[in-house]
Length: 315
Image (cartoon, rainbow, N blue to C red; front, top):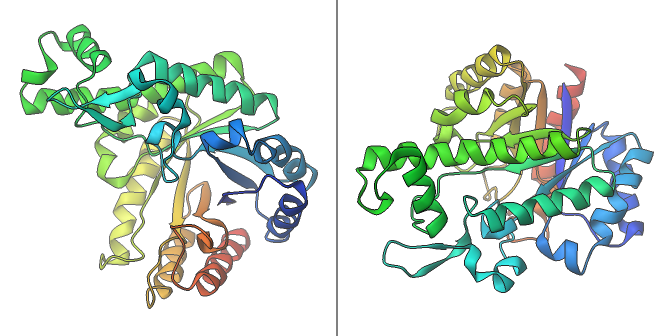
């Protein structure tokens, strides 16, 4: 099983080297670098130095744009939207929301520019991180796209048509970005994670010819869900990926684990090893210590995550 870790990284190559060596010792295959917009403007050592250091140690560098457009994942502090307010989502009452809209061509163009940058630095994959439905956006781009696809006004559309539209927007965004990568940077593996609550979109997303890798994140460490109930979810995605010749990945939670829940990392991880996908990723490095996603006991959580990563390699 291929394994990897998400990594907040550092702008100083000395610190990057230390962490990448530790990843090599864990026999990780991929490092998924969570690059924020700020890393493209001020702390660019993270995206500049990590690819070479990782490859020197036999690890494949993959880029995730963490918090880009205040949409994807955490760390939401979009500099782009401050300079381009036309990219914000717009509420039904006309007020602007704090997140960007991936239907808006201005926002899509910015993501594509960032992909050009990471490809130039030697990253080998690009990961579309947890795209989900923009249920509250009625910006000009969303309204125009609804008229194009369905006719009529998005604002007055029935709820079932709104839902179908929002889901199609997710799928088309993944398609647009994957197509862009393959047309301009064919060396990039194209990847996305659709959360379990968006599983209705798995089958259609898997049909995207330019997408290489599809996964999900069953983040149940703090929940009371029965671990056995992971199996049908994983099997469903496994079947979809096999049918469409996609790489199938799963995520193990090692972030925001509350005190007393650490054992759930082992329990979920063992289930991933027992029912292996092609790839197992862990979010995130050392239990996300030093971030607002930190586990309450990051050292214990990280040790359990390492145990699972070793199990995955040893079968």
